[in-house]
Amino acid sequence: MQNTIYTNNKEFAILKEGTYKSHDFIITTCGYYPAAYIKLLNQFAPELANTWDKFDFIKVHGGISFIGKCYLSKDEGHWIGWDYNCAGDYNDSYPYNSYKNYNTKKWTIKEIYEEIKLVIDQVIVVKDYALWKLLTDNHN
Image (cartoon, rainbow, N blue to C red):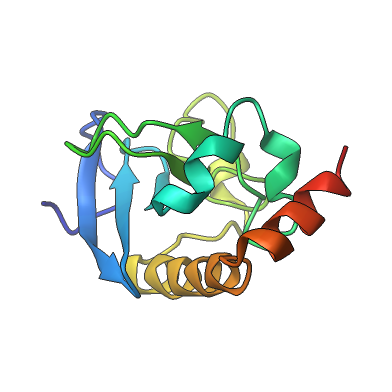
């Protein structure tokens, strides 16, 4: 594991992984910007096929932008994720312009971990299938 999010090494790397309230998580970097992934528990797995809109209730930086199997994990489960490559975020892939020199946000592993905990807490609130069904059916 490496400790630096923004590097000259533009390969995917795991910055931090662990478990919070029974949910596995991974914080990654591709050198340009970080991303976060959370493994969903099995009761959510049947609801995941092509259901981006079913995660609209989760409030997280930039919104959920990934649903599927996380290839950085050995676990075959279903994961959700988001990145820190939104407007106002620092991105080291802009050498051709001065965008990265503006007052853009460089995220820390600690800040991302705090956001992971908030997302997991939101997922736990809807772990009751009846509430999950109510929330997801209203998005169709």
